[in-house]
Length: 358
Image (cartoon, rainbow, N blue to C red; front, side, top):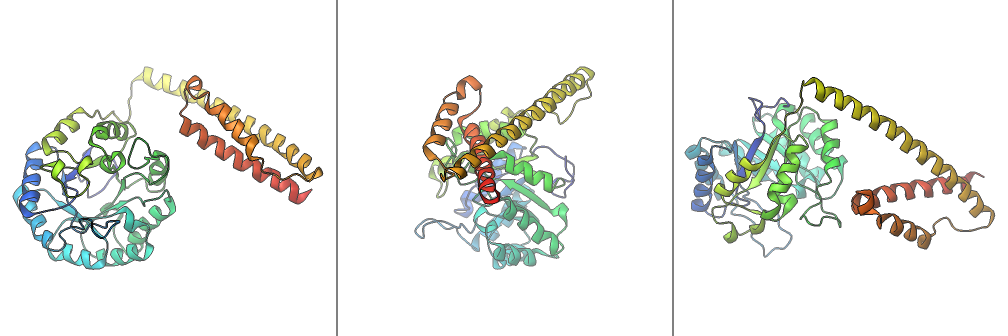
């Protein structure tokens, strides 16, 4: 477990839960009290200011919800966090003595807002959860973390939240997990807790357990899940919310594997498998190098015959042929297309280089 004041006892998994939006004092307090009674929640969450796409959508109760959150903390004894999108929001959170904030995906994309919020947080004891941006841009996500560090917010008060990305390949989820981008952030900031948001990845309560278990298998440090006293009546994101009692059952169903084992047979088998993978990786990249040498020859032939580099019909046939073998290869169509796109782009670069230099 990484070291953070968010998880002072190294608890894994850290569980953050609460309604997408605080809709009324009664709704918030009842939900939070029921969550506390499960004995499985470490922090309570609720949105007060909701950045919505359309102006006629429910945009939150705003400042008056701050007092409700403070009351929820007093009644349950659990820390509370809410989303902020401006320094004014941070001032309200600090004035009411709340415990933390999160930076939403729509805010992470805006360096000016992140800087404003970071400066407002500096010098306080607020915990800060930083969600990934809407679109798959790791540099923006990393930049948001760096802005808090540069104004003096201790790294022990920061955490990452992976809530998926808006892409054209998100099915069956609301947002594409793109797990490798979360791993990239872990590589860059290994001491930060990495928390998964199954609610926003799935977008459907029926898929929450599947996503939560995947996060557990991938060594995430915790989960943030939306919970409402009456999910179907929620004013925002009703489909992805669950009752506190359903959340308790879900958490009991998730298996969190050990991070390591000292069993001798396990270590021998793992070492053998890793050695085999290292050899296969070397062979794969040797083959790719050979493939690019063929692409260089194709570039020369095209240059000599004054033919354009990009041959869309030919490449469409290649993709169709290989993707058709998806089941046989036991590789997902999404993976095959991603690898083929990378290979194609590199081939185009090689052919272009040949045409420019020869």
